[in-house]
Length: 380
Image (cartoon, rainbow, N blue to C red; front, side):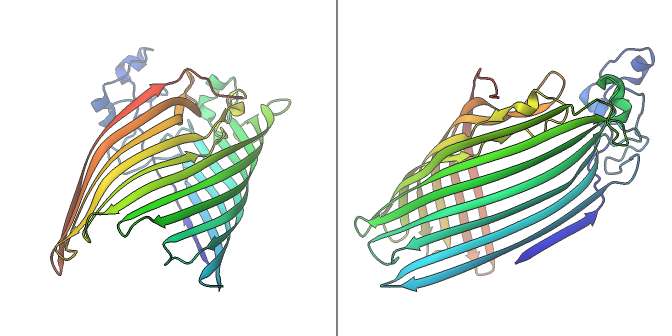
């Protein structure tokens, strides 16, 4: 059982205007150089400049807050039977409540204030695993997994002083309920081919279904609706079936040196753009799972009676349907499958126990990233 909570202020921004004050006084929006903006020489579009140059002191229109409560419980049971077979049950329950008032512009004016919440999330999960005796030359584990989560969120975006750019709308009240159901089955086997050579093969099939009821209302600063109805009211449903897997070979050159090669496939779940609070088109956008295939080879050493560990790893990560943040011309941010990418490199790790009470360590890495931009638009 675990839990936690916080009841604090939420001060996470400092105001730095980007415009030249002399030019703005003449009606010209001329942006200052970056160093001048950081030094606090600029003003915002309303001519305001933070009077305190200290970047760790905030000036807000009113007090902020961050109220978060978390609670979870898990139950693990192991049942041994036969000649060393083990059935394991893992049951989990998690719940969270969150309400956060964020001042986005760090100024007395309400250019951008967000009340994140109240939001409530609740999830339950169940996993069952059956494992063979681990001391056999051939060992295996099979299992299944169930997961359900439901989240209810009510966000309020207050943009009062920027309402002239929003057709008179001062704020947006966003409400959505999202549920996720996941079903998975998995298996993994390990085989001692020889006393020194070992093979590991495993896989997992995963089916995930997401439902979203998402609506947004154009309001005044007090939350009163200024439109005949909601700005948008949509219902989305999508499901994905993906698999992950692993195959690896390891070889013990000696009691102190081991080499390995492996290939792995994994994925990041798809989802909806619930961050779209005032864009009916963006709120319909769905992004698919991100896939990565990783190739690794390396050497692990433990030398001088385990006082020195030196490891070398080479790797190649190949991504497809990479999930990236993109921005519209109006500054809105969305997640979409816009690119593929690959990362390859080499890593070195060293840890040494110089004396019984003194240890040193370090790591060094070299890598090259290559992003291949895709022309495919976000799916609706």
